[in-house]
Picture 1: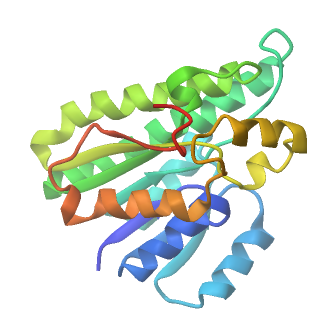
Picture 2: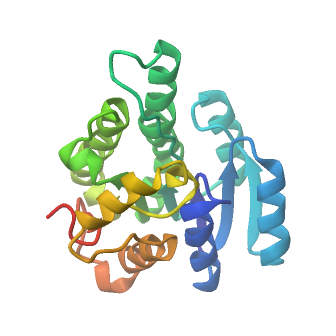
Length: 237
């Protein structure tokens, strides 16, 4: 049985990815930062020995070292944990700026560094980063968020080149407007505007992202690495 770690793996997109992986025969470690009740509810819902929930704030390198040290060898890492902040770049606090970078970008880097030694030793591994279309084109009032997601894309491409000879594939899913808690604060007017700008004229679902991840981990994608797979309804082409 292959082992997978999904950061932010007990709610929203991460929950859908964790469920998909369990259905595909993986042993899944779903990491969560704070919301224990949501994580426990997901664990009870799945009711499977294939799921283990672990509290781990990916912005804290010491927590990462502890949790990944206990998990051991990992076949698949999905760097999904992320936070957003809608504010003017000149107004965002220094604390929030650092938090966005620590969770969205350096957290993914530290988690990847934690799993790579065993992957390199095993000459096999798979890392998938969940980015955003704003990392490709940028978004007003989400400057720092856009920068972190752009960083994930650059990280994906560079790491894919570095570890390819070790049998490790690194890919990225660039998500569009997906209806999760992160986007629940959008006004009806803003949401309708985003839908109007999307050629398929609708928002995406967490399952759409999980389906993309399912393809990237499959044998059908065995010759794909360093790729950015867009799941955005055509909004960014």
